[in-house]
Length: 410
Ligand SMILES: *Cc1c(COP(=O)(O)O)cnc(C)c1O
Image 1: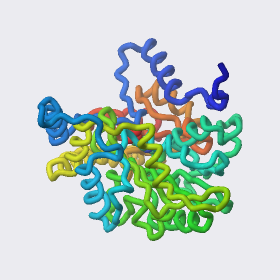
Image 2: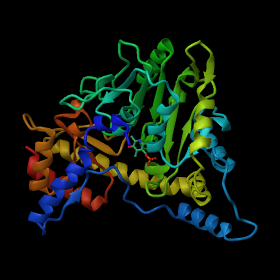
Image 3: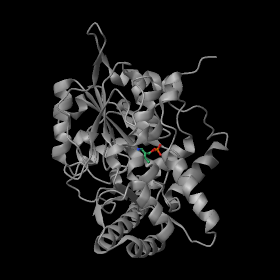
Image 4: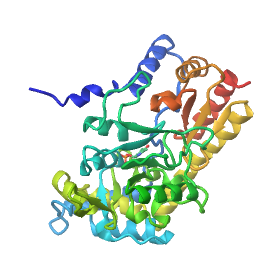
């Protein structure tokens, strides 16, 4: 049996397994150490009561003759699609039609699956560092060659996210067909300005390129002037696909609900020049390969938009963002160079002169008993940086700040 050899090109799922290995080795040698984990991008607060109540009530409903439901509509129930249109878009002056919204079980899946509707010969641009899903799914699909020593695949256009560009690169000089953007960004915690997104939209329209815009962290944006959706930029409906998730904004990482928007104005072409709406291709893919999100979970997602749900989830987002603000202020006061974390639950810190991302990770683990994520694990340009997550209890974050300050401040 021949396998899909593209999988052989993948870098051995290096980052998180390697972190796990080092943490286990440390814990085995230091069983009494009280580790604080600020490495993972996962929520820590319990599901908000309004959401729990909605999921329970919907589950009870399914257990009755009148309330039984089988397969749901593939694009999602109207009650959820309408709530999304109203609260995530209309409230910010953006009109999205119901049939442009596709409810799914996660933005990880959606951002990994979207490449299926495009030609195998696309030129793809990604930021560096990058959320690895965008890259690996295109490697699996055969759109690249092998990787070099720095983990860069032949065939991709890498756009370095650096201090000079505020970790939000603008469009490349060259053409590309598809670009993945994530704002607020994982891993760097940076956020795209309106000008940055406008330059991307202008570039995409000029080159007939498509932008895949991952807004999984939109709820963490504090400044109301910053765009939460790429559709707040004129012309984006003709060039952008947007993904949002309930995972980070409402604690759904273990519950699973998200959605993707594919505007009908987004047009692709066949080799003979025939124009095809990308929305129709995604609809076909979605209906063929997916049977929608469980009814009680969609009711739980709907509850995120109720007055209590909004209030309860915004208290949770505020809680994480207060952690982020403390991390920023206190680590800077300890002499550490910190970036971002103002509109995202991640702080990006520059490792001390001469120290690699992994050296820094080891020192933090051994001297502060704190787990971070080495920036180099997200791409070559992440070398010399580390990601600190604000997803933890206030007590743990405050304790971690003290320990990091003592271990590496100066
Ligand atoms: C957490 C995260 C998501 C959300 O993924 P889900 O599958 O919806 O949980 C998407 N994109 C990025 C960059 C993320 O960090």
